[in-house]
Image 1 (cartoon, rainbow, N blue to C red):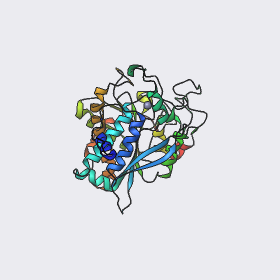
Image 2 (image 1 turned 135 degrees about the vertical axis):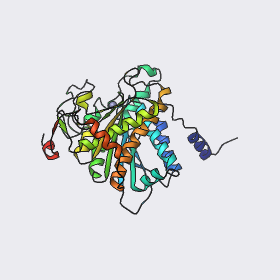
Image 3 (image 1 turned 90 degrees about the vertical axis):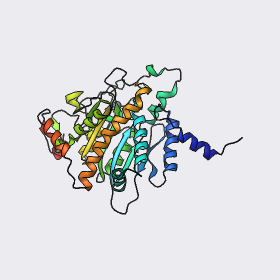
Image 4 (image 1 turned 120 degrees about the vertical axis):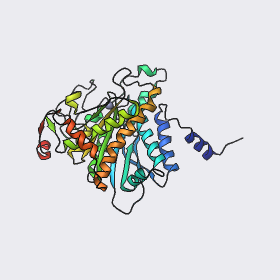
Length: 349
Ligand SMILES: [Zn+2]
């Protein structure tokens, strides 16, 4: 008996397993399926092409609204070996689409916000990381770069100052010049064109269990730094799920100084809230996080991201105070010291 193709596709979608890692082809099919399954709130948008001419696609998610909307940006899979990152973006999309009809708060956010979510940004690298089926999962090498360029360090701002290498064999090779890679250019072009509407920029990586705030450049903190520690509330929300500890810090204080990151670029062009999530773990499995940890990792990170997005939404669209954050701000003051420079000063560095 031949099954109708559409029925087969629907069945496949029903059984899409969010607790497995998926190939690029599977994720691309899933992206299409999301649009088909939720045509009232989901649309695909191609905003660039990769070095190997793949379409860089995001999912725009939100309700149509005659009133002006703001936006949330989330990208995953900029480093190809960090497979938990695309898994998280898919989980995030599943959760918000599963809740907006019944959860009044999410529905309100769907009315006020558009979510721009890129499940896999570095598609070429991701494909490469899956290519050799004989390679065991535990021995995936660092296929994190397109043409071996560290894409997150490609922004034009502060490029290249610290935390990068001019050696093309290095993991932190910054490329020939700022925005030499099409993936980095696609993101910065999109962010620049929509800078007045995007409230929050989230870029998802692994590993380290960190929420990184601007800036990667040492001794500089953004004018709204105190508010950026809304990340602390996110860390608490994460811990409440499975007890995992996430540290909220600037990169120089917890990792190393770097420059030219998309997180810093977003903040510098005026997107007020900008964070890098480094998901599980703290090094035991590193980039090869077992599939058994996909679900708990995504469940806790979802609550963390939701905490930030809810704060950003409420700050913009509601007068309700987010009292918990105010308390947490007091908790972090004094931990990080740094010279506060105005944005104009920073842009001249
Ligand atoms: Zn990364």
